[in-house]
Each structure stands twice: as structure tokens, then as C-alpha cells.
Image 1 (cartoon, rainbow, N blue to C red):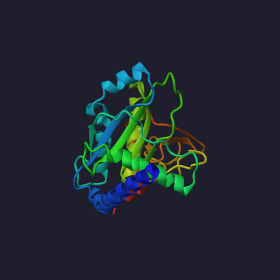
Image 2 (image 1 turned 120 degrees about the vertical axis):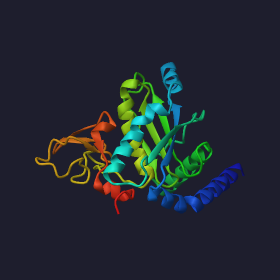
Image 3 (image 1 turned 180 degrees about the vertical axis):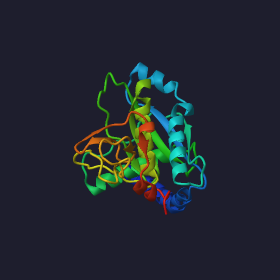
Image 4 (image 1 turned 135 degrees about the horizontal axis):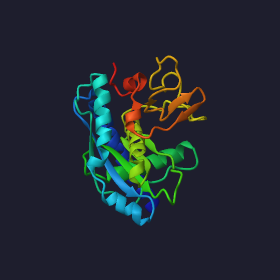
Length: 253
């Protein structure tokens, strides 16, 4: 019986969120007002250094993300002078539900509902906010991070990041990438090779010679140094938002 009660609760949440989804998405896509991004730092392990790192975080630690979006928006003449506003809120004691290992449609739908319920409970920033749950890990315990993700429906991001100042720049790149997923952008890289797609995944597709590229297209996640090689940017200063991505998020019409 409790199982069906939980299912009914999830379906009610889904119906409530879906009823406002279209209007909220349309409002975001006008870019006449800033998109509020609520960041929830979470501990991905029991490391004391991870807890200490999270305790020191505030909005100023993510200011480079705001500056990046503002600079890129100016290139596309976006109405909002500051298109993204970062707010930092205390994280929950529990982590977001993990994506299913099985790729069946039902499993993915069930996980999506649970994730949206998890995010819905975080009511600090209001219904229209993009909620990004940043799970920090001690790099001495976990040298390779799990995959991050962003969902347009529900405007949710789940980011895995390293709890060390020296990785703050690359953490920002992943957070900004998932923010764009939440507002409708799609990946610009080959899922089999992780290499950027040519030409849309290049920071400067008109460059001659084409390689090496000076910048990375944010939704490609890597800067191509050769036709068969790419490297992960260490900061948003090495990234741009390309025309195809700008069109997807309604910066180009």
C-alpha cells in the first residue's frame, strides 16, 4: 500500500510541476529578467576537508559563472544585462537520487520523478529557479568524478565536483554546462569519443587553420587541440557559447 501512496504522491508532484512548466520556460526564454540559479552544495563523502570546503562556500565563490554568462550575453545582445543570478542555499542531508543503471524508459521516468520531487522540496528560491545540486568529493578519495547531468524539465542540475580551491575553475565549467542543459541546450560532443562535434562543438568554427582551437564551446566541454585530440578547460575564461547553443536557449532568433 505504501508503495502506491508514494507513486500517487510522485504523480501529483509531476502534474503540479508540469502545469507550470510551459509558462516558466517561456518566461525564461525571453531573457528579459535574470534566471535565478539556486546552488545547493552537498557532501559526497564523509571527509572532514569536504565538509570544511562546503562550509566556506558562498555566492562570491560562483561569481565567475555570473560574469561568464553576462559577457556571453552581451555578444548576443540579450535583453538581461545580468542573465544569470547565483544564490547559494544549504544543502539537504540526503543526496539526490542516483540515475538508474538500467536504461529502460520506465526506470528513467521513475528516477526523473524522484529527482523532481527531491528538487521540489527545496523551496528556498521559488518555483522558477534553476536548482543545481553540487555534490563535492575529496579528490584524494575519488580521483574520477561520476557523470554530471542537467534536466530541462524541472530545471534541475546534478553536478559532481572536487572539494578543493584548485579545481574551482573546472567545477564552474561543469556547473555552467548543466545550467545550459536546464534552459534547453544540448550536448555538442560525440558520445562515443567525447570529442567536440565539428563545426558546432568548436569555440571558433571559422578559425583558419581550424586547429588548435583557442576556446571550448561550453556544451562541447572540451577544447580541440587537433582533429583527434581535445582537452578539458580549466576555467570559464577558456569557454564560449556558440551560435547553435545560443539558438537553443533563445539568445538567437
